[in-house]
Each structure stands twice: as structure tokens, then as C-alpha cells.
Length: 332
Ligand code: CP3
Image (cartoon, rainbow, N blue to C red; front, side):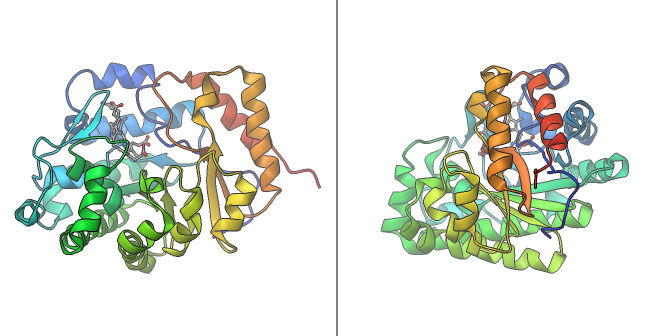
């Protein structure tokens, strides 16, 4: 890893999805979880951005709640809202709703989608899972949250229950990621999207050991492992020591500073602010170049957004960003 490259590789989180007219045409109504269960559709949606953008990786069209949905926890994805659980996780009795995942039996459609994709893709396919903390937050809050009040209340008031919940989610995550790699994914990303809501101390105590176990287990598979979260400036060093090969960073920390926090021998992924994608090209191109220049030719940079593509983004802008990044050469 951190191999010399001819140009900086680039892909976009949420590159498939509602910013693409062809996605909206194919996806129509209904829960995204049903679309994910149709390998032909899920594979096609994964490929749509590849045809357009010339990005250097595909990311599987799936979602972080697919495994817990598949084992019957009772979670759905509400359009415009995100994952919702009508009956949230509250007490020890709810642990019974989180049996172990058998990916071949519970999520065969995910593996079939991967098989179809690796047959046709000429670029790497990134598999992924939600990290235990981020998935737990949806199960406990019952939906998206700003404060993570219930999640933190459980952490602090019932450590034994928290540990049991995170242990189970860790096992589920590991099974899901290994099954994706065995089906042909050539890299994985662990999305701990909301870990930035935690202080370093909270992260270290309640989250770190589980994410570390995931990366440790995956280390046997010799594939690049990416770790990503939003607003993680103060915990980047900890996320890095959890064991990934690549640490994703959002726009709040400049990429050179992020690299210092992540430490040597690791790659960094990011970190264009997706909110500027609605601005004019002059501004966007300046920001893209600023990131590339700040990286200063260091090995191990994957260009990406600091978070996902939003539905209102013009796909032509993303295509131009790919060209700009691919044409950039550090002047020496
Ligand atoms: O292109 C890709 O990045 C791959 C596909 C992907 C989806 N979800 C498809 C999706 C990935 C990697 C995810 C991961 C995911 N899901 C995360 C981690 C990434 C992040 O954004 O931090 C999280 C937190 C979720 C939970 C989730 N699922 C949210 C918050 C939403 C948005 C709700 C909405 O409608 O605004 C979803 C739904 C979802 N997952 C969509 C897509 C393309 C959009 C809804 C749809 O098409 O119905």
C-alpha cells in the first residue's frame, strides 16, 4: 500500500444515487432495501457512476443497515430520512433481535451483486459495512439523531448492555465484510459516520475496541481497509490506531494536518467539502487543487469528498473533478 501512482486515484462516497437521473429512473418508488435485494438492479446502479465519471473504484450499492435488516431486527430506510427502527433497542431483551449473521443465507443478494460486478468491472470494487457505533446509534435512537442522547445514555448507564450490543454488531460487521471480500470485493470501507459526535475519551472507551477487532480480523485478507467518519478531527489518531490502512477525513481538517494526526505509513482519503459542489467551477477547481497541493505529492492519497454526494449535485461537476484530479501532477 502507499504505492507510487501515475495520478491521484479518486472515487466519491455516494457516487451512485439520487444525483443521477438514470438512478432515479431505475430506482422508482419503494424502499431502497428492496432495490438492494435485486442483484441485477443493484449491480446496474453500482455501474451507473462508473460509466459517467471514470472514477478509479466502484462502491457496492447497498446500505449500512442491510445486515441488521436481514436478520430481522426491524429496521427500514425512509426516503429523505434514513434508517428508522419502529421498535428501538432499549434493553437486554432486545439482544435476542440481533442473532448472528450468516451472509450466505441472510444476504445472498449482496454476494450475488458482487459476483455480477466483479465479472464486468475493470476497476476495484469497494465493499463496506457500518461500524458498530454508527449502526448502534440508529438502532437505539430509532432514526437519525443530532445529539445521540439515548445512545450515550446507554453507554454511560449500562456498560454491560452496551458491550453486549457492540459485541454482536461487531460479529455481524465482520461476517458481512468477510463475505463481501470472499465474493470478490477488493477493498473495504468501515463507515463510522457519526463517531465524530464522541469525545476522544468516549471513543476510546466505548467504540475503539470493537472497530479495532474488525480491522484486526480483516487483516488476514490482505485487502486495503478504509476507516471513515464525519467530524472526526479530534479522534483521527484513535481511528487510525484502530488499524485501517486508509483513514478518511472530512473537510474540517486540512489534509496535511490530517496526515499528521493519522501518522506515517497510512494513506489518507478525502477531503473536498461536498457543500461547495453547488458553487461555480472556478471555486470548486480551486478547492480541488488546494487539496492536491496540500498533499504535496505524498504517497497514499485517495481523492474523495469529505462526505457523500448530495442529491442536488450536478453529475457533470463530478466528472470535471475526476478529470482535474487525474490531470494534476505535482510540480517538483
Ligand atoms: O454510492 C455509495 O456510496 C454506495 C451506496 C451507499 C448507500 N448507503 C446507498 C444509499 C452507501 C455506502 C451507504 C452507506 C450509509 N447508509 C451510511 C454511511 C455513509 C454516510 O453517508 O455517512 C449511512 C449513515 C447510511 C444510512 C442512510 N441510508 C442514510 C442516512 C440514507 C439517506 C436517507 C435519505 O433518503 O436522504 C440512506 C438511504 C440511502 N442509502 C440512499 C442511497 C443511495 C438514498 C435513498 C434512496 O435512494 O432511497
